[in-house]
Amino acid sequence: MEKEKKIEYIKEKGISKLVLEHENHKLERNKQLEHYEDVMYQCGKCGTCRTIFKEAGWERVCPSGEFGGFEAFYLGGKNLLTWGITSGQIKWTEYLAKIFYQCSVCLACTQQCQIPEIHHYAGEWLMAMREEAVRLGFGPMSEQKRYTEHIMKENNPYLEKHENRLDWLPSNIKQSPDAKLLYFVGCTTSYREQNVAIATAEILNSLQIEFKILKDEYCCGSPVYMTGQTQKAKKIAEKNIEIFKDSGIEKIITSCAGCYRTLKDTYPKKFGLDHGIEVIHLPEFLLDKLNSGTLKFNNQINMKITYHDPCHIGRHMGIYETPREILKKIPGIELVEMIRNRHNAWCCGSGGGVRSAFKDLSAFAANERIEEAKKTSAKAIVSCCPFCLNQFKTHIKNNEIKAFDISELVRKVI
Ligand code: SF4
Ligand code: SF4
Image 1 (cartoon, helix red, strand yellow):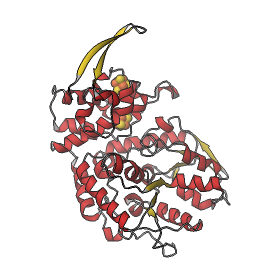
Image 2 (tube, helix red, strand yellow; image 1 turned 60 degrees about the horizontal axis):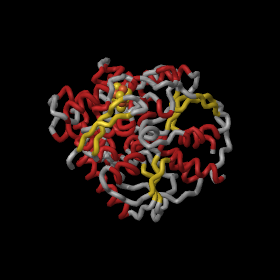
Image 3 (cartoon, helix red, strand yellow; image 1 turned 45 degrees about the vertical axis):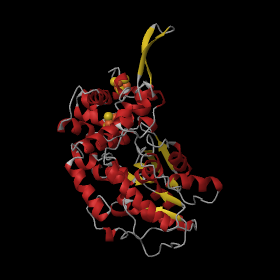
Image 4 (cartoon, helix red, strand yellow; image 1 turned 135 degrees about the horizontal axis):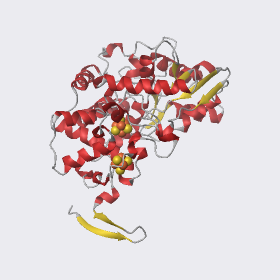
């Protein structure tokens, strides 16, 4: 579409503003890079995206920028580089691609920026730059290529065998083969945080909910999509949807933040695969059952805890209060907040392919979050994402604080 540009004088502010008579004024999500080319230039290089805007003492928010130590790694720099690419002023290089991959796509930066287009859409062009890197052969990073190859062969990124995916499943878990409700376990839970899978299945059994687990569950495709490999991820999604439909699934519960975002949001909105299956995250299901009186807490846990907002549930999907409401209802639990919470939460450093390709950055982010949690004097960090949980358990030293998934705590008190 032809772009018309005009200058508009804004009398009340005494300034002139370039107005783009273009579809950019009704920007859409999940588009390719050129869709955003006339908006990322609006970055004023103010640096506000580095720290929490106004609130909480200007604490820092960007693991990529703090670790990289240079403007290019913050959102302002990434906007400028993206503008340079779309306007043809700079060219792709391996190092440029690395800057965009050395970012967990946590979106904490976008929450701070007060420019509406950047605030609402910068996450889209951070992803679109990864897609473009893949298209031009500069991405993904070699470790991400390796796990993608494994996903295409063995359906998980952990270099594990597909046939071992259900090794976690105890024989006492009761499933209903004809159930229309699926518990989608996910790769991290199946292979690395089996306690979460067991707790979730036991909670469902204790509520006498009819559900099933797929014998042949495959990766949801999130690690592939988040590294810019959209076409490959879409193929995975198509295969999964076919299996869901063949199995008569009408509703999916998942205990994984990444699977939830992918199944609920990415499949229909990015891939255009409107599967029509209801997808809910375990905490939403649990709170619903608590509020209706079906789920009751009969025991107590005397512990001070702090809650870590997973990026894929928080900023990516806007769920902040549901897990907190559950935690506050557990008898004996005292919930204290870290300084950076909800939309300002510091990322654990595992997402966006960072944990596999940039181990030092990933460890830096995790350690900073663990230190922040310790400052609250909480005895445990609780989250509702197995990837965050695994990240914390990997980096907590000397048992100085514990890490739990919300399902594990709920399982203990029912
Ligand atoms: S992205 Fe937003 S907050 Fe960051 S430098 Fe640009 S205008 Fe400022
Ligand atoms: S998405 Fe997260 S890591 Fe990436 S630039 Fe923004 S705050 Fe930094």
